[in-house]
Structures are given as C-alpha cells and as structure tokens.
Length: 123
Image (cartoon, rainbow, N blue to C red; front, side, top):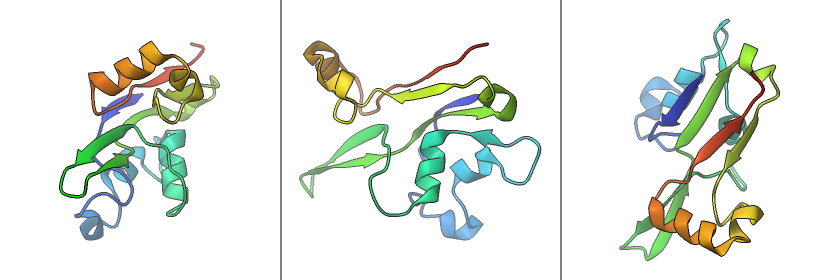
C-alpha cells in the first residue's frame, strides 16, 4: 500500500511529455506483477474530459477562482484489492454526507487545501 500527496496527477505535470506519463502512472506501474490500484487515479486516467474526482482545492488569486485537482492517493496491491476496499474522498463540496454536516464541512474547508482520503478494508 502506498498513500499520500504526490503533487501530481494525470494531465497536471509539465514534464509529463518528457516521460510520456505522470508520476502517478509510474508509481501505479503497468505490465508487472507489482501493479497498484487506486479507483480515483484509474478514473482520471481513463477519461480526459468530464467530472473527475478531486482531493484538493486551491485559490488562484489572479483568476479569482478555485482550481481543483486529484493529488492524494491510496494505492493498493492486487492482494489488498481482493479485500474489497472502499475508498472515500472527504470532499465537502462533492460528498453529500460531508455537505450535510455543517460542522464537518466547515472543518474540512478550513483545515487544509487538501481533503482526506480514507480506505476501509477487511484485513
């Protein structure tokens, strides 16, 4: 299992053209016995247009708007994926349960420009 803020995602890295893929794709691995999986990364990699999961929200002052990005991941091995893991991004604007609890919603928005990602799994 690998988890954390990679500060990169599909389509976000200016150097992606140099390597042909993002650091997320490199860490996930492909074509080996040691590939990792994250459903949010898989969704982002599987489509280039449309709504994407996001784990961070940054204010862009000159443009007077927020930029949202998928930067935080929990990647699991094939063996752990067999344990039927359930991922959750605690994004107060995208998760109805977070939105419906004003104290939680306000805490998530105030605490950080990143939102927690959790994984429930039977071990």
